[in-house]
Length: 84
Image 1 (cartoon, rainbow, N blue to C red):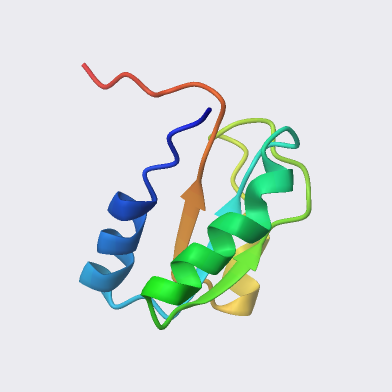
Image 2 (cartoon, one colour):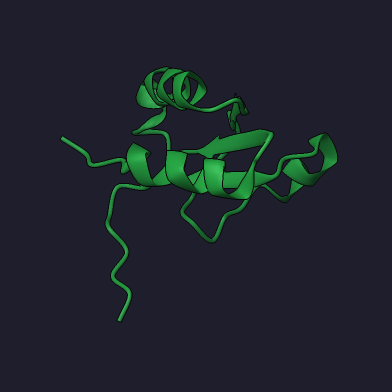
């Protein structure tokens, strides 16, 4: 139903040699969080955390994640971004 582009996310994690990843998902996609987490962990050496707090869109970043040493935030949303 949704194209999470996990392949692209995994490539970026490997490219940046990321140790700690935070998944940032809106409530409607949170039921898929464990599936996404497992796939990323299987393909990389990164620790993957799931943000359980609010997520009102890509502009609602969990800045508190700096406090636990997150290297990369991966945000998946309901609508594809169109870069022009």
